[in-house]
Image 1: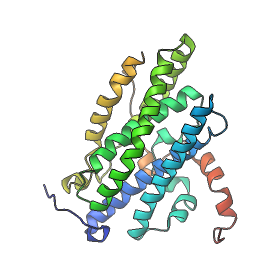
Image 2: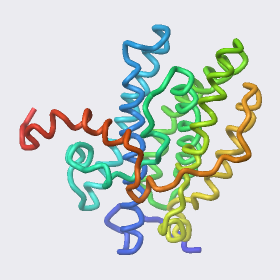
Image 3: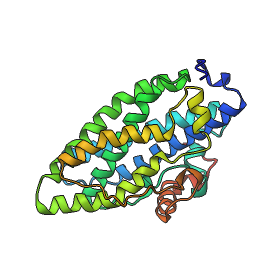
Length: 263
């Protein structure tokens, strides 16, 4: 395995450059969309503490998206604002999990836990990446994700062992969200070159680590993953639920009135 360190984005050869660009789009688009979904609870969460937490997490995720989009810009892609607000749904590379409507509180906290557990696994791996700028960014972002994961885990356990109604709502949320969460690890044609270069692990390995991390928490919450759960793929190649178009119509509304405007 070639474990040569790439000190800057400019050091990437052609094939790896394309692979890293694809990886960064997946990371950035997931963060942008989940950030927007979390922001939809601002002013609507069941208690003030949760309202503040979801608003803070939304701000963090959008900040992470900005950082990934900036790396893409350094690789020759459009500027971050254009990437976030100027693309069509089919051009996004986010997983189905982040696209789904916010649903009830049980669904949102369950999704947040599953997503941030995946982010924790991914960022932990990236800290050891041979792509130095990615490793440096992951080191910074992992500190924030630590608190996101603690928040999600707390709510999953609280609602899972709460009342009969709360447990039922959490199980219903898991039945929908788990298959979509598996889609966060959708294999791509770039898995092998990224793994061979030591830039990022294969998606199959990240999925294995994620499943090991979330299983005991779900079990402690009295929740059960259906044996029939199958990954929902397609997001990494631009196939998305209709909910993403509806979200982007809102997110991009002001920008599309006049993309040349200066604020």
